[in-house]
Length: 364
Ligand SMILES: NC(=O)c1ccc[n+]([C@@H]2O[C@H](COP(=O)([O-])OP(=O)(O)OC[C@H]3O[C@@H](n4cnc5c(N)ncnc54)[C@H](O)[C@@H]3O)[C@@H](O)[C@H]2O)c1
Ligand SMILES: [Zn+2]
Image 1 (tube, rainbow, N blue to C red):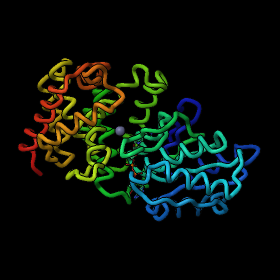
Image 2 (cartoon, rainbow, N blue to C red):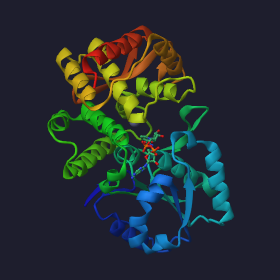
Image 3 (cartoon, rainbow, N blue to C red):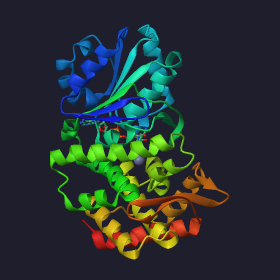
Image 4 (cartoon, rainbow, N blue to C red):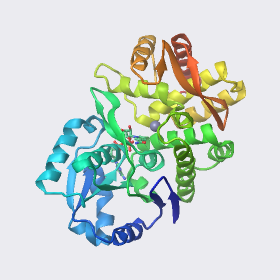
């Protein structure tokens, strides 16, 4: 069992999280008046049963089930959940449990934080992405009109409980999606971690716990230094400026591309490594190393010229752009990231062309 100290809460990574959760519940002296567990159909099916078997307090909990998928990370779903909490007469001493992936964590945390101006919530992340990324940093919220995370707030859970066994029932694409964030953590902060990733078999489960802990530690250290993203925290946006635009694009109804968050970030990391090479000292060799490694783990995606121009339009909505140029976090080397790098739209188009050209060498 590993305990990571985040801002004012702990993240437990353990094969016996039931024990940690029971201890957490016992430590709350006044006791929670009622427990509400937010799930989607997949976390209800795969993750709830082993927990309720060993956590007595969960037997009397109310289960709120929402439909899975990013398209449900909306204010309309929040309204339903606030209504349900009201109906069940939840008071300020209620506990909200987010059992699921990043959608459940972002939306459930937002609902709990805003209901009666805030009730306690804990996260039990059940996807690799939610474990290594959404488990730390306090970003909560929902999408609006297909714009990701347009409405939200910062707040931390009372605790986070991670069991990597939950990954076993995940679809392979979902595992890869989480792996993208792990790659990002190595690229922005830790060359040795990168070397380890490139040389170890990802399917070994012992190794997986190690990856989760290392990744959370990297993100946690950055977030503790700059909780409100004024400064150094922006390094976590590496791969995400273009990645987010791709993700938004893939949510648009006429888009031919379907991308999960991490899949979009993987493409974003190749494009932004190209930008890093052009304007931020990343060597040609390291650009090649990153490109090859990502293509070994992610299927190439066709992005045509029309898509590129639409992506620039989407990026203009992004809060990170300034006066026509776009603001990026870029690598000066593997393991070192610099913030506030200005990039022109033309160079972004070039980076997408670089990605497209490289796909030809890496057909799976
Ligand atoms: N707050 C943050 O810091 C932060 C960081 C990264 C991502 N996010 C957000 O997280 C979301 C993406 O997270 P995600 O990839 O976990 O998506 P998700 O929550 O949609 O989960 C992906 C799919 O896996 C299913 N699932 C969950 N656990 C499972 C399990 N153990 N076995 C089988 N299926 C399971 C879900 O039902 C869903 O179909 C995005 O909305 C993103 O914006 C937030
Ligand atoms: Zn991300």
